[in-house]
Length: 146
Image (cartoon, rainbow, N blue to C red; front, side):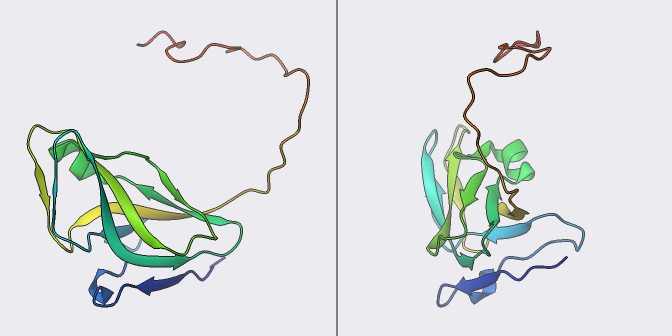
């Protein structure tokens, strides 16, 4: 099943249209629309020049690029970021520099990836009790590895 997703580009940013590096890739690369210096231990909103119109029942997830994380300690502050079907503004990537020196981004650099996902039709049901499970109420670190 194929769906159509409309993409509009900021004037002058048509060369930044999302692309996949390989046909079998799950996500499209998002590129920076600007030159920027990411300060150390700070978040910075990087514009992409991309505007998207998703069909109802779909979302776009903005995810980090593994190479930037491994080699430069760059993360996405709200990973994955969610783009709802009703949003029509420019897609921005909230990047965090966890490194020890400022990181320079150049216009056109691949900064994140965008995955289009179909959402299940979910209904929340209020109840007074939940079924028991092996895990129970064990939370963070409950598997024994800290």
